[in-house]
Length: 418
Ligand code: AMP
Image (cartoon, rainbow, N blue to C red; front, side, top):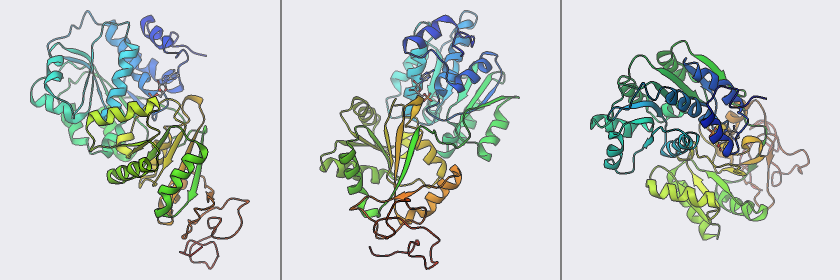
């Protein structure tokens, strides 16, 4: 079994990790850390929950601290730049950098939108060893000439697939143009679309590629269940599941910001403490909601995919897909929030007949088929085609359908009254 020490990290870094209770590197850490320490470019396939943040944060801190005297901080100069898609992820990455770097005298800073720019400008002036930033706010600083990227030694693109999904490609290219040619590049992505490959080809120089778990595979510590239910009964079913199973900490995904707000309001009216978190909320409101959820004051956090991306909550026991995502990879990202680091988790999807196609896409991606379960009292009027529970009575009111739509099969996907 390897240790952080045996991977080549210096004592102050592995001591900080050990104090946090981390003594054994995760697979992505065991693979990526030696590569980063060797100074070459890295292409890493890893999703949230694998320990990927430490996989780049620790060796970057090691590298920067090893050369701290020969490369003094100039005014506004940045030595390592970590680009992330969301504010929440920026906060978590910066927290990790602070954590693993607590016994080093390196300066880390986070630049995110939604907060005042002037205090950030002041902090930048003193020079920064590790800068964690979202692309938009970083470019604001570029425009104000408050940041100097011409001495960046190491660049990280974290959750690169999500950055492309969010339309940051032009911002990223503008930022890349400001960096020195000679530098080390690390690209982390959960998925590898042709767009990501294109970005990696242009950015990385003869990279070492590491990957953990099969791509698009979901952690086998996560129990995944599908409940067939009509769209207009989903809210009541969710409240019912939370109450009957006494779920304490539930992260619920909706497709839209508006839907997140409505659901949080509805649950609160039902006496279940719930808050919504999405891009229209102020940074303060998002941070507060997340903190209260972590502390257990808020029982249900309702989030859109983008807002929830990278939320780091250890031992999150329940993830609910109130609606299935349009992109099946997002299902994998969503449920990646539970069952982390060996803890078992449960992912529940509430699926109505209109989401049949999305469910099939998820099944295709994961190469498995899910049983459609039905909760008594919430039987759908319109069944969701697919596999019914083996023991379920073969009535549309009790079980979901089997067979192809329109084949005359009584359990077909056609609308029917229970
Ligand atoms: P990440 O994939 O970076 O979001 O990390 C997922 C979770 O694993 C975070 O809560 C980390 O604090 C935790 N973690 C990171 N490295 C280790 C480790 N070596 N052992 C146990 N937990 C870890």
